[in-house]
Figure (cartoon, rainbow, N blue to C red):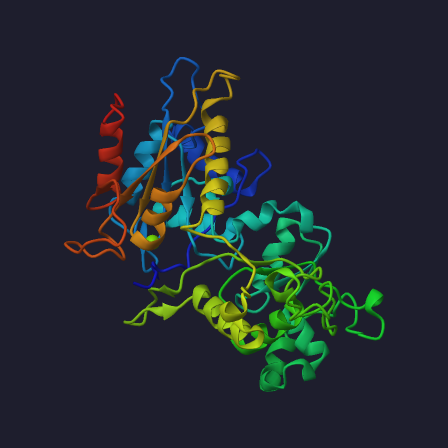
Length: 415
Ligand SMILES: [Mg+2]
């Protein structure tokens, strides 16, 4: 069965909750007006308070919101956890906007204060890839150049898009010429020309980051293919190693070409149309089809070498666990330096067996933390059917999930 993602155009997060942060400042009137609010921010841990050894990771669409509207008991569930200082993070395959925008939206919808560091969306792990921050990366996907802007906010200093390349060299993909006017509106000059006669000064791509669902599959496929067949990532060149049977992968991607990252594996997702729509995974499948046609594919022992992130893949869960541990230390460990007990269990609450549940079940924590999956019936999963991947527990909604988990943990302040 094809992976069916929940609606992925999700809210975001992004503040540090420091005194200088605008999000924090915006919360101040509420803090003054409501004595409980500071407690809700989960930053007021008492050294004598019992420390929870469990935490939560929540999918968003189909768990906390549906078609942009908050689900009935989402506020209750999150507010309860915050009142108990039980840590949680959000883990979504959505993307396309900076975390700060998503956090603002989600926080407003659910009426719960959220820090940016608690929010992991499909491309959030790109924010930690410091090795490319001062190189030239090509960002693919998303509306206009919104993902370029997100990448720059992550700290990437030189970001090009396929639209920049098309605008500078319309002959690179003549079938998108009718869209040139559209691209001109947001494209930028290239940091270097495409000049195969002078490879040392020509545009060189050091990483390809598919941030979000590509909008112009033809252009994006053409440019990614050009980069992957190039010598050392230099546009306009062609590697002489391509097709060399004496080399691994028949010589493909063996000549210094940049790594190719995908942020989201979802083949399909639930949008407003009554049937599922193709997602970033659909684009990847199309690119792999072209790659197979060009290289011979599996029959020639050639694969498209790439790194796929997002649920259900291990790197995304590792990243989320890292964020969760840091967040937990922030809210519980400030006055318990060195004494914070390790995190024993994380409850992954989701509506999609193919991503949330499969990911939670198959994740192997490097810290030995047990990840327990809980499937809710407020999204993709249809009550009464057999889920493709069996969760630890099936419940009605997110409040049921929290109630069941805290009972499992014998948490004294049961809801
Ligand atoms: Mg979902």
